[in-house]
Amino acid sequence: MSRVLMFLHAFPPAGGGGVIRAAKLVKYLPEAGWQPVVCTPRISPAGSLDSSLLSGIPPEVAVHRVGSSFLEFLWHRTAGSLGYFGPAQKNMNLLNILVKLKSFLKGLFMFPDEHVLWMPVAFNHFRKISTEKLPAVVFTSSPPESVHLAGLAVKCAFPEVKWVMEFRDMWGRGHDIFGPYLPLHRMLERRLAHKVDHIVVVTGQMKDSIRQKLNLPAHRVSVVPNGFDPADFVCREDGWRREGEKVITYAGSMNKTRCSAALLEALAELREEGNLRGLKIVVVGVMDPGYRQMIRQKRLEHVFQYTGFLPHAQAVQYICRSDWGLATLSAEARRADENHVPGKVYEYVGAQKPVLALVPAAGAVSRLVEEHRLGIVAPPGDKEAVKRALRIIMAGTFTPAHSDFLQAGLLYSRRRTARQMAEVLNMVCNGGSKPCAG
Image (cartoon, rainbow, N blue to C red; front, side):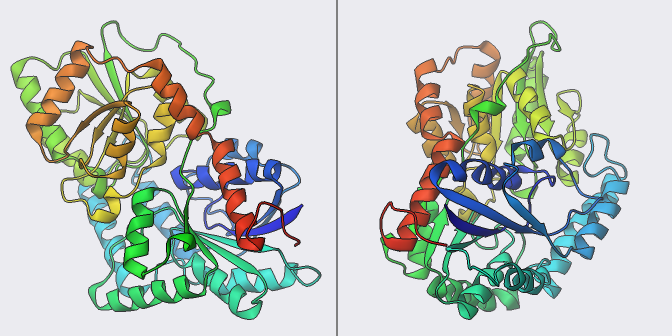
């Protein structure tokens, strides 16, 4: 079986949406002829942990935990003490300042991001564990972008090792780039694209954007979408909701790029019209404190329920118990955000819940939802369109076809996407489907 060494900045028992993709690849790649070896930082005890994900990692997979980030530990400890990751945030004014300050400082002082100091530690460990036999492929996945520097170091030191670079998000999407550093970011991105053997992205729109941005031929970039694992969706109905209640669940972090002001305006007007009775929006994840302040200012706290960060298995149960899943972008979202389909959308598909997508009409989420007829799309800045969508949900007049969910489920199962990744690895090694040595 060929070996692929994966530099992954986040890996179980770390929790969060970005971890799920890595964990499922490691789980299913061996079925497709590839043996993963993982190199990842030590876990910060102050971070958001999800130990349940460890049960899905095959016991034969070697996981090397080296180095750590003191800055990440400091952030989790400080923000955690103010309830940032939980349902009851304390001192939201201070939290809002801290979130903005963190974004500003890491963009000002850390290039390309705050995790850059882990790269030499990861590369040195690679040299230690590869003295006897090099892996066939090195795989790096961002964000954070600095993880790709480990792949670059391996490629420069061992040119015979193939390198696959994955972008789960467009470059710089997860953080603000300090203006004077923008040319350096562009230069580094081009340098990496020139040295890497192949690039993987998660949507067709991302592929088109990266090809145009970096002037790459089509054969240099592949799409391996996000997905869901059917094994995770053993749903339990336990009578937790009130009769006549409509529940919309948002799973994941609701950061500033995903906060729809039009949603709050639509909810406030529907409340004044008396058409909001029985609606509940459950946020299963961390919410931006500034958006939470807006909810309070519009007197909509009775509509929202916050759980804070939850392990994936518990988050799935909230999705299963809901009537709809929610995906949002802010009206000011950048093109990089529009090209992305968050993992939560596929989790809604796995639970066969229709999707309320408050996203641009030309974006990747809109295309997915409309192509498979999975729900309702409304522009994130169009209050009237959002109101119409909410009225449809309250009236219960939208019923997606069961066959549409089944079709989407076949396309986006994690086992299938892992096979697609294995095909990319095989192609990079020898231009075909036969596994390569290493």
